[in-house]
Image (cartoon, rainbow, N blue to C red; front, side):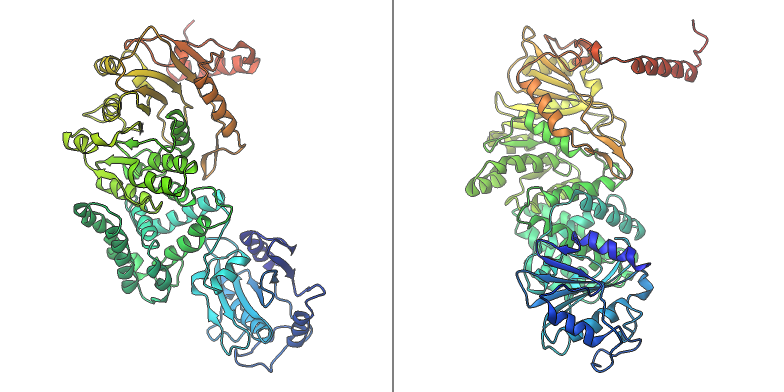
Length: 621
């Protein structure tokens, strides 16, 4: 019965059910339905697994009927079958000579396969373990009539969907349905593996980025699994990375600094010491990214940017929130909302002057390409997305993020967005939209100074959308820069965002929408939105997620209020403001008393009493 844990795990990972599936049938324990009499006959002939039986021994058989955990048939290829043999403990995965089919998963899978291959091409999968981070998997393809099987080494320690085993055996692209849960699970597992081999928080995403870039090279994809030792594999990976970079139109003077970032992997002693066949080795990371993440991009129902989502999720685990990289990651749903506020379309020319890992540019590109044809998409990727990043490691991540999105040309500048040289280089690009999450609490520049500089990059009437700390919207701070902004630009809207939107960091933020090079008219009202509930909730190990699928409806309501300039008690306000006023909805909206309950009152009183006790003021009358 203990093997049931592994059997159920396999079904879940394959995304199949017993009986009929889209691809064909899954039969348990040798229980084959009528119509597949050849399989039934063979299972009876070979009998139960003997204790000892060499691979080349066809005479030694067992009693009764053979019962592999599962046999799958394919509607599109009736000459091929898939069989799966399971053991719960990884100690029972494979014997030294693969001749003990009763006790070991690999031995048992090959015992079944050698008899069935007389009539079928057999995909034999041996699985032991019960979780993603401890599972052992070996997959063999034993073609009909052949003397020996071929091991499909790329599927090592990976459970694929049945059709992907067929694709792998036939040299076709693998396809997987998009799964956010799968992406998050793999991100967390990889993060933990890298922690174990002592790769620093800052170098973790660089490590993953290098593999993702290397896998863009077809020669590397086709040959890396034939390399048996660490040094040749890492040298081949770095060579592939360099080839992709050399063909990416990145400036020559920046190529070497990026290559240096990726060469760090060669010096990691713990990684060098891991045999390539082990979980957490360099080969394991390459395999997991190629077999589990990239296939999501190839699925016929593909709608999500699986690669970017994985990359974003992985970076999120580095330092927990991106702090290890020196950045605060902008949540994906917030970047999408800001792109909508910026009215992104296929004709937009977009810039982020402190682009970090390029999440705004990636989101904007996805939205722009959705409404464009093939020629327009190529032009968007080549001429419509621009970034500036000062930190070399973040610049490397931004470049990587664009390369793996096949952007055609990475128009990201390694430099200072406040420098005259950077400004001059970009002033001819006719930039119409700026998106920014500026660095917070800098000693020399305030967040509003980054907003002002972003506006200076834009054409007249261009839009700038910025997420900044709420302190930037309070009239008592940053008076000089606030005056300059109103003198030259128009504040169209400010949205007060959820207090924990950047969880686990504690910064409270608002989103500002500015119109460039049009002085603010304080006789005309600015829109203020009170957007404190985005529907997201906190879940262990996953952070804030849209667990109840409320976000799409909430975003639609926010945009409807803004675009229609609607005033709704408790949600929005219209107010004429000056540079000295507060720029937050809380100061101007009316309370919606219909939503106040007795519980709200009691909770407020409890919070106030707790505050008094904490601050020693509990004796106040």
